[in-house]
Amino acid sequence: MHLFGTAKIDENGHLEIGGKDTVELATKYGTPLYVYDVELIRKRARAFKNTFDKLGVTAQVAYASKAFSTIAILQLIKEEGLSLDVVSGGELYTAIKADFPVEKIHFHGNNKSDEELKMALDYHIGCIVVDNFHELHTLHHLCSEKNQNVNILLRVTPGIEAHTHDYILTGQEDSKFGFDLQNGQAETALLIAMESKYLNVLGLHCHIGSQIFETTGFILAAQKILEKMSTWQEKYNFTPSVLNLGGGFGIRYTDEDQPLEPSLYVEEMINEVKKETERLSLPMPEIWIEPGRSLVGDAGTTLYSIGSSKDVPNIRKYIAVDGGMTDNIRPALYDAKYEAVLANRANEQPKEKVSIAGKCCESGDMLIWDLPLPDVGTNDILAVFCTGAYGYSMANNYNRIPRPPVVFVENGYDQLVVKRESYEDLLRLDLPFKEKTKI
Image 1 (cartoon, one colour):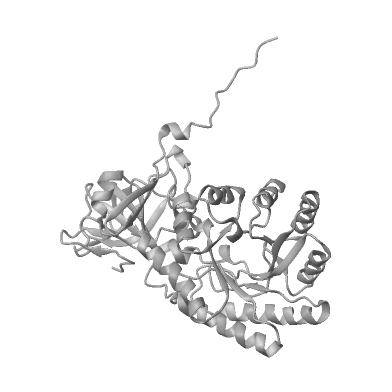
Image 2 (cartoon, rainbow, N blue to C red; image 1 turned 135 degrees about the horizontal axis):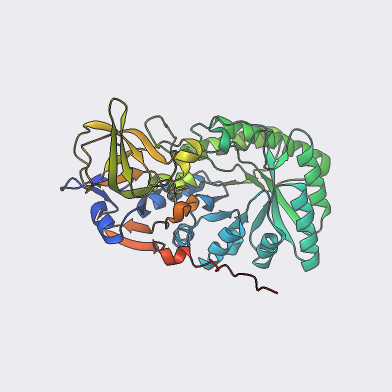
């Protein structure tokens, strides 16, 4: 068993997180339940930020809020002094409601609507990451109507293919994101942006993938982008002030995963950028990064109650829980792997391998295959680790199942930060069918 952050086994053999007995949390708030270790999130945020400070590099560490976006988590991120990435009007609205400093908000996305761009301009956010020519022209037009300037980054695809799941590769040439650095699209975009008196090009942005366990991809991306920056400085007198190398830093889900410490990713990036800027006679840019999963992923644990079981002789034993793909779609979506323990019997040795099934009416609603556990009963609570990223944010109401609540724990205190949905919540936007009046 691998325990994260403040997690430990207490004297009763119960899993404890943030000084709180998870069995008591399950009783108090019900299950399924997302539990977040606030101290671990703080530790991760400071590890990224302090490394830049220690090495004397001007930087922004922006939390990629698509991993988990609620008012409470954004307030915590603000408290830790980080910047923020949003990718939709809804995420931007959440940030505004969390009173996040607008100058530290960056807006991403490959298909921002006119309404979303207007919203970003109305709130005077710090930066818009422009993804394509349509957006570039639209943003210029909107700014001209408002007679307003805006800071932008141009998102480029440097042609680097990170070794990760195909569905979350984004830095290679064949991608829906960004201007291609190799075929001239990025250069054309730069020239268009530089001609606009409303668009202030701070620099370039790239994102090469997710769940990355080595620094090679980031180093290669930095080399390619800085080479191009050097060319553009010579040709167009363009000197960028920002190089955003994105996120995608991996976390440990199972023994197969071997992530680096946050400080190591940052140190390697800084060293490479310093080396290349000196070689190319470029001024040292600000370095921006965008950790999301690596800030909140292993800080989250989902608690479930055990329900029915099915033993298929000589094949497998299924154990069903009261959640599934409605609160964690990642296993069904791209075969994500997790580890778990019985929160109320965490010290007991495994006696059998079971497969954890969700309650949705889908054969693919399986959370974990072949999980070693003690003999499982209906009074047990299953704790699934590392569900802090893309659990709640991708939760859904399939089969009209309400989404779970979210609880933050820290120093022996628990705080409800998202209420459990009710059946009435599910119907809140429904309207009745009205029969047409006969003529």
